[in-house]
Image (tube, rainbow, N blue to C red; front, side, top):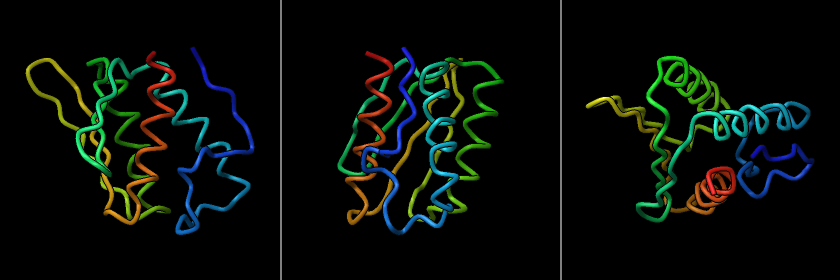
Amino acid sequence: MELKQTDQDDGWAPQACTLPTAERPLRIGEFDALFAEAVTEVRRVAPGRVRMRLRAEPEFAGRAAELAARETGCCSFFTFTLTATGGGLELEISAADQHAQVVAALAERAAEVVA
Protein backbone atom coordinates (compact mmCIF):
# COMPACT_ATOMS: atom_id res chain seq x y z
CA MET A 1 0.00 0.00 0.00
CA GLU A 2 1.39 3.41 -0.92
CA LEU A 3 0.28 6.63 0.70
CA LYS A 4 -0.78 9.47 -1.55
CA GLN A 5 1.31 12.59 -1.57
CA THR A 6 -0.74 15.52 -0.40
CA ASP A 7 -0.18 19.10 0.55
CA GLN A 8 -0.83 18.02 4.15
CA ASP A 9 2.15 16.68 6.03
CA ASP A 10 -0.03 15.04 8.70
CA GLY A 11 1.70 16.98 11.47
CA TRP A 12 5.26 15.81 11.11
CA ALA A 13 6.79 18.84 9.43
CA PRO A 14 6.71 21.40 12.27
CA GLN A 15 7.61 25.06 12.02
CA ALA A 16 11.11 24.22 13.27
CA CYS A 17 11.76 22.45 9.94
CA THR A 18 14.02 24.50 7.64
CA LEU A 19 13.32 22.47 4.49
CA PRO A 20 11.79 24.83 1.92
CA THR A 21 8.02 24.40 1.77
CA ALA A 22 8.15 23.51 -1.93
CA GLU A 23 10.48 20.57 -1.20
CA ARG A 24 8.42 19.08 1.64
CA PRO A 25 6.06 17.00 -0.55
CA LEU A 26 9.11 15.41 -2.19
CA ARG A 27 10.63 14.52 1.20
CA ILE A 28 7.29 13.14 2.40
CA GLY A 29 7.21 11.04 -0.77
CA GLU A 30 10.68 9.68 0.00
CA PHE A 31 9.60 8.65 3.49
CA ASP A 32 6.40 7.12 2.11
CA ALA A 33 8.40 5.08 -0.42
CA LEU A 34 10.79 3.84 2.27
CA PHE A 35 7.87 2.93 4.52
CA ALA A 36 6.03 1.11 1.72
CA GLU A 37 9.04 -0.81 0.42
CA ALA A 38 11.11 -1.52 3.52
CA VAL A 39 9.19 -1.25 6.81
CA THR A 40 7.68 -4.47 8.13
CA GLU A 41 6.82 -3.40 11.70
CA VAL A 42 6.25 -0.12 13.56
CA ARG A 43 6.54 -0.03 17.37
CA ARG A 44 6.07 3.04 19.51
CA VAL A 45 8.43 2.41 22.41
CA ALA A 46 7.96 5.68 24.31
CA PRO A 47 6.55 9.15 23.75
CA GLY A 48 8.75 10.70 21.10
CA ARG A 49 10.36 7.39 20.14
CA VAL A 50 9.46 4.80 17.52
CA ARG A 51 11.27 1.73 16.17
CA MET A 52 10.70 0.42 12.70
CA ARG A 53 11.84 -2.99 11.56
CA LEU A 54 13.08 -2.85 7.98
CA ARG A 55 13.67 -5.60 5.48
CA ALA A 56 17.31 -6.50 6.10
CA GLU A 57 18.71 -5.60 2.72
CA PRO A 58 21.71 -3.33 2.07
CA GLU A 59 19.65 -1.18 -0.32
CA PHE A 60 17.17 -0.30 2.44
CA ALA A 61 19.90 0.32 5.00
CA GLY A 62 21.55 2.74 2.59
CA ARG A 63 18.31 4.53 1.72
CA ALA A 64 17.32 4.85 5.38
CA ALA A 65 20.74 6.23 6.36
CA GLU A 66 20.83 8.71 3.48
CA LEU A 67 17.29 9.93 4.16
CA ALA A 68 18.01 10.25 7.90
CA ALA A 69 21.15 12.30 7.22
CA ARG A 70 19.26 14.69 4.95
CA GLU A 71 16.32 14.95 7.36
CA THR A 72 18.51 15.94 10.30
CA GLY A 73 19.90 18.69 8.07
CA CYS A 74 16.54 20.48 8.12
CA CYS A 75 14.96 19.05 11.28
CA SER A 76 17.82 18.88 13.74
CA PHE A 77 15.49 17.87 16.58
CA PHE A 78 15.25 14.31 15.16
CA THR A 79 17.64 11.55 16.18
CA PHE A 80 17.83 8.58 13.83
CA THR A 81 19.56 5.36 14.85
CA LEU A 82 20.01 2.61 12.28
CA THR A 83 20.96 -0.76 13.75
CA ALA A 84 21.94 -3.88 11.83
CA THR A 85 22.35 -6.93 14.01
CA GLY A 86 21.67 -10.65 13.86
CA GLY A 87 20.34 -10.46 10.32
CA GLY A 88 17.85 -7.72 11.28
CA LEU A 89 17.63 -4.03 10.49
CA GLU A 90 15.94 -1.41 12.67
CA LEU A 91 15.48 2.32 12.35
CA GLU A 92 14.73 4.20 15.54
CA ILE A 93 13.45 7.76 15.32
CA SER A 94 13.26 9.95 18.39
CA ALA A 95 12.91 13.57 19.46
CA ALA A 96 12.75 15.56 22.67
CA ASP A 97 9.41 15.94 24.46
CA GLN A 98 8.48 19.18 22.70
CA HIS A 99 8.59 17.31 19.36
CA ALA A 100 7.08 14.00 20.53
CA GLN A 101 3.92 14.70 18.53
CA VAL A 102 6.02 14.94 15.36
CA VAL A 103 7.45 11.46 15.94
CA ALA A 104 3.96 10.15 16.73
CA ALA A 105 2.63 11.54 13.44
CA LEU A 106 5.54 10.01 11.52
CA ALA A 107 4.92 6.64 13.23
CA GLU A 108 1.24 6.83 12.38
CA ARG A 109 2.04 7.49 8.74
CA ALA A 110 4.41 4.51 8.63
CA ALA A 111 1.92 2.24 10.42
CA GLU A 112 -0.72 3.00 7.77
CA VAL A 113 1.57 1.48 5.16
CA VAL A 114 2.49 -1.59 7.22
CA ALA A 115 -1.10 -2.39 8.25
